[in-house]
Amino acid sequence: MDKKDLTMGCRVARTICIVLALGGGLAAPAAEPPALIMNRALTVGGGKEVDAAVNVVAIDSRPVVDNKSHVEIAPGRHVIEVVCTARVFVGMATVDFHSKSAITIEVESGRVYRLDGEATVRGDCTPALE
Image (cartoon, rainbow, N blue to C red):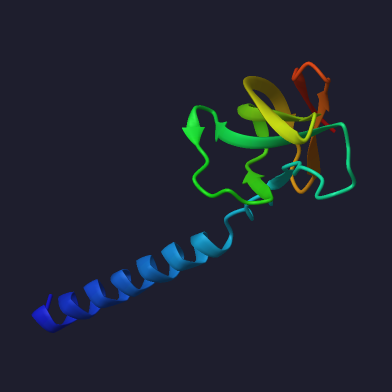
């Protein structure tokens, strides 16, 4: 066999391998879209006696760095850590009471979840996910 034929054979084989590799990448299943968890902010104004804010601070023990209004999360089972803040109007001012808790959830792809909180005048805050 001629050396030129061997080189040409290697080139053809390499080209076929590249085409198969690129084609295989195109056939990969599309990733599922993430779900969204919407944080709950305190109400501005309105003169409420009690209000609550609930924010995600960690997902599966990994801290959430940005303080955004929502957090993207991959589908599946997760443990989210939240800070629930009860804001209570006392006399002439407001006082914030913070509590941290963990919620285990099963998240579906593309769905939007909303955090909410139940606050009391004693400063207790219980988070909930809707």
